[in-house]
Amino acid sequence: LLFITSTFLPPFLSYSFNRFGFKLTFLVCMLFGVLGSVLAVLSIHWQNFVLICLASALMGVPNTAGNFFRFAVLQLVE
Image 1 (cartoon, rainbow, N blue to C red):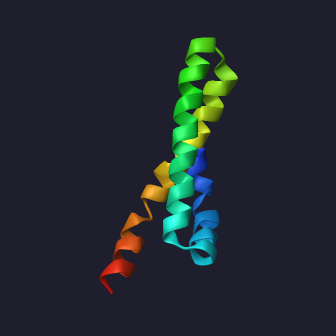
Image 2 (cartoon, rainbow, N blue to C red):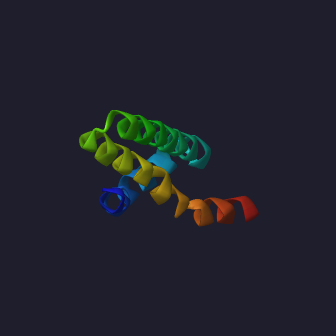
């Protein structure tokens, strides 16, 4: 699910970058990653396969946002 999230999320992130800016969008994406990590730990503890799948999808959000760091850096350099 991480790769599925990474495939379909970039258009929504581009819209979010234009509307809210890089800083807020990156912050929200990283919070999704933290939430996914906590959910993954809990799903392993509870032995719940559905939650580990959801956690994998949530951890795909900061993975995808990380690919946009180069564009944020280019705007800082200008």
